[in-house]
Image 1 (tube, rainbow, N blue to C red):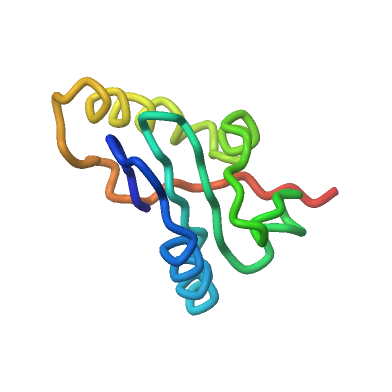
Image 2 (tube, rainbow, N blue to C red; image 1 turned 90 degrees about the horizontal axis):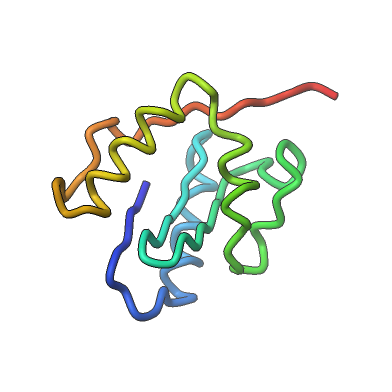
Length: 105
């Protein structure tokens, strides 16, 4: 997980690197620009599992991202992100692990 604030530009090269790294793990990786709420997500099967197109390096809708976060993780995640946004904390305390909801439809 990368949380970015006060960043002018997220480079395509950085996003390409994260996309390449995501192919080496079963985990989802995401970048969340806290100043704009732009979110990029990467991982094997993201397109099929969550109907998220992560191949064009465009940010996804925040509501789409929130919809895949497991309900048990949402409160803690947003509490910790609120601390970062307010300047109370410089890093997250949820360990970078956020479960996602996978449904078989």
